[in-house]
Image (cartoon, rainbow, N blue to C red; front, side, top):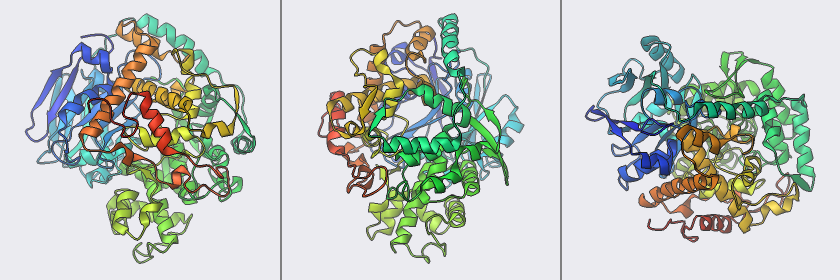
Amino acid sequence: MGQGYMGKILNVDLASGVIGEETIADSVYENYLSGTGLAAYLLYDRIPPGADPLGPYNILGFVSGLLTGTGSLFTGRWSVVGKSPLTGTWGDANCGGNFSPAIKRSGYDGIFFRGISAKTVYLYVKDGKAELLDASDIWGQDTNDAEDMLIKKHGSSARVAVIGPAGERLSLISGVCNDRGRIAARSGLGAVMGSKRLKALVLDGKGKIPVHDREAILRLNEVCNRWVQMQPPFISGSGMAYLGALMRILPTQMALDGMLYKIFLKKWGTGSMNQMSVEMGDAPVKNWKGSNVDWGIKQSSTVNPDRVKAVEKRKYHCYACPLGCGGICVTKNGEVHKPEYESVLSLGALCMNGDLESIFQMNELLNRAGMDTISTGGTIAFAMECYERGILTKEQADGLDLTWGNSAAMMTLVEKMIRREGIGDLLADGSRVAAEKIGRGASQYAMHAGGQELPMHDGRNDPGFNIHYSAEPTPGRHTLGAQMYYEMFQLWKKVKGLPKPPLLYFKGRKYAADDEKAVMAAACSKFMSVANGAGFCLFGLFLGSTRIPSFEWLNAATGWSRTPEEYMAIGERILATKQAFNIKHGVDPRSLWVTDRAAGRPPMTEGANKGRSMDIGKMVSDYWRQFGWDERTGKPPGS
């Protein structure tokens, strides 16, 4: 066994109840790292083509990162993986909290489930012993209550990953929770867990994680932490909105430095951008057909980050994070997790909802149900537009008045979606499935990529988002790349041959479909594949490659002497394996592109993104060419 990784996985056959360890060769880690890289390597071979994502042949995995537990910073993320029932593609969902080190301390880099259990069960691993236990008493409980019950039973040192009622009812927009509100929400993998009748994983390990040079990691941490703790006084939440308006008005834009965003994160969390993003055109409004004109500073003031911070009781840190962007808030309904940027805007601006208290409540309901807030908000916005256009009647909507901004109707609709009751059953599998069932032209109002609702970052403002939404093996994800991500990563300072953006450039340059954009997008994809193999948090990486020693940490943990270019080649290999997975399962990569409205076809006639239209076909084709894939079909060589 090498250093940094455990060298083993745990395989669980839910149909037979057989549990066994499997040793993984060092060469696999050397070529794929751990995390989603290891998972892609294994599941490409082990899930048969055409497997039903909710059937016995799909494999559901929980993987930790290669750097998790080595002492490095920002490396506490874990992922759940499998074939997505929402998109039919490779699926993974990333999460923070404290579950990732529990996987490795139990002795494994990943835990993989196949088959379907005859009864509801959960996996319990302690002191090297793994067993399936009866889950009948926690089946039907929400994620918070189930986690509390399991910790009460197994002790406070246990760590839990669990599905809620949404996953049990096989909602295609359900995820997996830990830490009473942190959720690996995307790709619908909570439904895969529910289909296997697997309620939870409970891990209580104390195993030692091997590290090649812990002193080197600690020295690297000192330099990194100095950057993290720098926190000069800054503007108010209201000032953020006007900064966004200024960025919209100016004809030029500065290349972004992640230190600025770090200041925002440390003060407000991800919600620092709530108003700023609407004003600058980054956040979609009114189901992607509106703009800052429809939901301007006066309307967005309801989600001013200072208003959220005013009810924040305490901050919290995920494992190995010195930043601490999370928070617990006190609302009329008690203590709840501070809603993230994506949750606020998907349940707010996207639906024209200015009731902050309702956003807190819906976010809490969805966390407890284990349902994705992005997809929920996107699906509600779709339903509201169908209602506005007469495609969905009030009778079909169970008597709900689905007019824009009706927070009471939204609350009821969320509850119905969780319970799969009435119209909620129609919407519980996301907007694409609902549109297919409704018919009457409804599909043009479902904003998705490959079936997954789009995040709250508009590719008409930053074309890089539309490239990654459309071209990645897991479509519709905002955590994989964008032009502003490339600027903040500052990879050109470490990786040879990458272009350096100018300090100041005209905005029109962002929308040109050229080779430089493709190179930048491909670099983001490769780097984030490495990051997700190592367990990195995206927000930490935004500080930049000279402040976050990602490659150096990997070498110190493993004892390797890899160059940044060699790590980027690993990232490319991981991405190609995921793309080959899709081809193997009959997915046409061209079917995953964002819907026309999101690409600016036709362009908007007013607002921050007025007149902007993306040539998705050319941008994606240029991107595929960077990997040596067929630029017409997106197929890697030999797939």
